[in-house]
Amino acid sequence: MGNNLRFYRYQLALFLTVLLAACASQPTAPSSAPPTATNAIINQQHLATLATIKSFALKGRMGVVTQKQGFSGSIDWQHQLSTDNIDVYSPVGGKVANIAKATNGVTLTDQKGRSISAQDAESLTEMTLGFRLPLTGLADWALGKPTASKIDASTWDEKGRLSTLKQDGWEIVYDDYTSTNGVDLPNKIVLKSEKVNLKLLVEKWQNTSN
Image 1 (tube, helix red, strand yellow):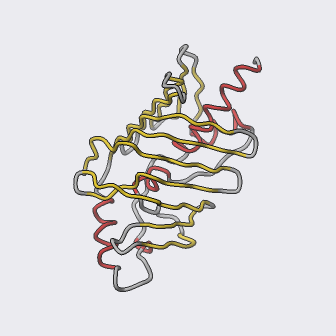
Image 2 (spheres, rainbow, N blue to C red):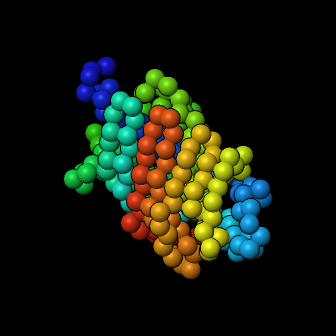
Image 3 (cartoon, rainbow, N blue to C red):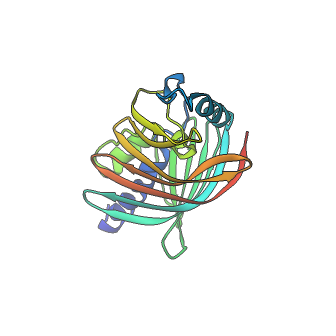
């Protein structure tokens, strides 16, 4: 394997890591309610609305920085309950790859038709990066809700929306929301772990279905 292909795999695996490691969303845990009684009802209503969203589409920009490498570009992400389809673009707009997730695995295909497949996204990142990054909920976090796993800490605004979240080794900050089809959804999310810093700027939520 040549150096160019290894570098190419590394760059695309950064996107794959943050987008697909666990795109199969879990139902939001009841324990995610905020600690204050004053906005608990508003919060539960907001989470109940988010729980009805089984699919979504978004376009946006993403920046990823690891201890070894940085990468930025744009994405077009189509998420369904058990499948995902993501087109990845370079900063100048050229399509870099397509990432497809189905029940039987994950496949990354570049613009020349070369493909890399694995049983799951964590296995693929181990193949390409040399270690597994245990992300467990970006599809939920992108909507502004915790996953069903244990919440280490969280804060909520006066509208019952997530402001900060610590979960699964990640610290997540929601800087802004936008209303889409009557639902407040994040349009700026910053995620940090020990090895990865990620910023997702959603420019357009599309066809969000309830």
